[in-house]
Image (tube, rainbow, N blue to C red; front, top):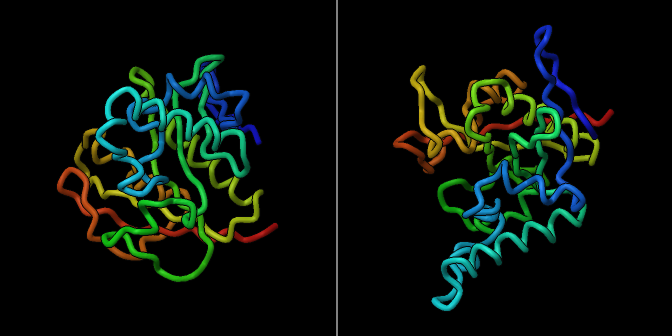
Length: 207
């Protein structure tokens, strides 16, 4: 799967590709390298680690966990490029594989459907507000559908017309998901930047 966005005349297209192991070196510049997209995938205790694995060793453990995930299927995310430059990341995967999410009291399961979860967006500084996150989301939908996922979940905040910081926006905004066909299902007890997260769903019809 490779998706190229439509861009104005003279502008360079955003190309989105699966985060396979061959592209692992491209992920670092586009991702939060403290988390390495493991916040939702690990349980709270796994993420925190023991007293002997804090700091750099803990970051290394998260990075190596993501490396192993990139070597498997389904891939754990997609990477957005402008030319050869990686400028964005979106992490996702089957909800059942998200350790923290499966144990969450604030974002409970709606039902027993084996949905996939979209857990994070990261866009490189200098490339925000240029359609990168939207291009990433479109590619995730395409990839998940191709893998036979029955549906996608997101845990988005409603910006309510105001500009919000990265703390609130890393799981995405309701407006972007609604434009892609997601529906709001329930306001969760999870918050970011004092805003509640909405559990949103997109049902995927198999083609």
